[in-house]
Length: 162
Image (tube, rainbow, N blue to C red; front, side, top):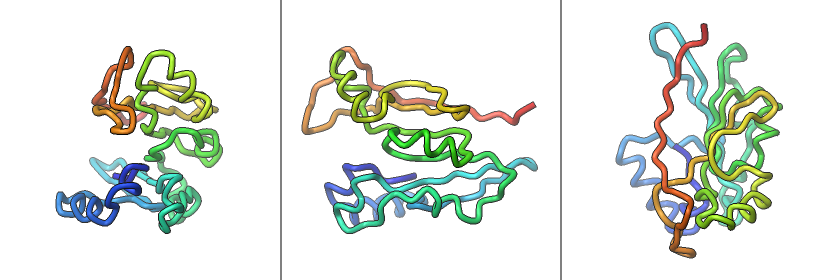
């Protein structure tokens, strides 16, 4: 998993300890190679753009991919979808993001799009890479309203290419 902007704003150390106690590995500008039934993939994660404002490392995709096997598909966890073109240029196959909450209110999604290079909700093809932006399940306390933009819990099934 990766931290998003809210973890950096509200008790970062406590959140990281909580996630570790749950057995989760945090990928902060890092990757893991996952292997199953003779197949493998790279799961990479970067810190949030807000990390450096709280004295944590800024997102560094090059560092996250350093040492990853070159012949293996890469799934990137990046809380904010705005840098998707850069990820595509570096060979990422699938980027999973959130952050936008789908725009929270129908109409406000257009403002969220401007702040996130056009990516707000759902699946996008970005220069041959698939980007999926999840709406999230909850509300942002700073704007506790959701209208016309449903909450979402996404299940993604990966299959070996034919």
